[in-house]
Length: 262
Image (cartoon, rainbow, N blue to C red; front, side, top):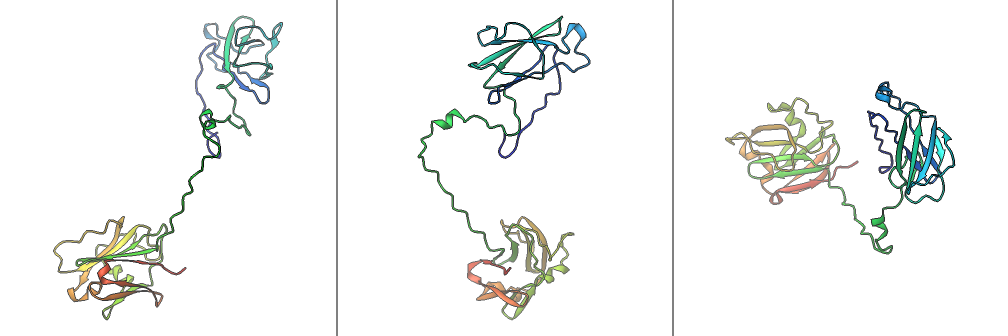
């Protein structure tokens, strides 16, 4: 068993005269196997047993005579650790060892025994409770003397089509980036990917500014701004969505988080 399900291991192979067996101690059953490989009989290998005998961990027989082979047999009571199964087809005999603590058949409803190491933990040991971290506002603006980045820091795609930045008598809508020469082919304002950003800077910059560390992928970059249009450098500016103010950012902060409605 693994978590809420099961891990199944299929061994695709066979060895002559090896017949694994498994135990279900809770139900008192032994599960036997036979050889189904076409190559099993070569060299005198056993194929389908017809009789078995059971022995305890010390080798003492648990039955007075041979028993008819079956896919499941009753597991004798009073066994401590192992049981041995001697199988025969009348010509060849094969001995299989079953460790009752290890060779366990896993069926629906099986509950594994408790881990002995966990039984040593005092029952009253307090378990620390982790306080979940509150989600961050969806939008992050990072700006400095060279550039401004609009970053989706949420865990989902955002509709930023009607988002705009307003300050110093200037309006910078997200649709402004649609004319960017460096636009990513899959740039979608209606579904702006989580962790991605759009970057704006002045055409006077000799090189493209580096996106902030919070930006996973720069989806769009545009440099058609004059130095006087860098409205995020002084005072404050506002973030609008659908014609409504949803946030106010201070130039001196250089960072601004905005919670979007809905």
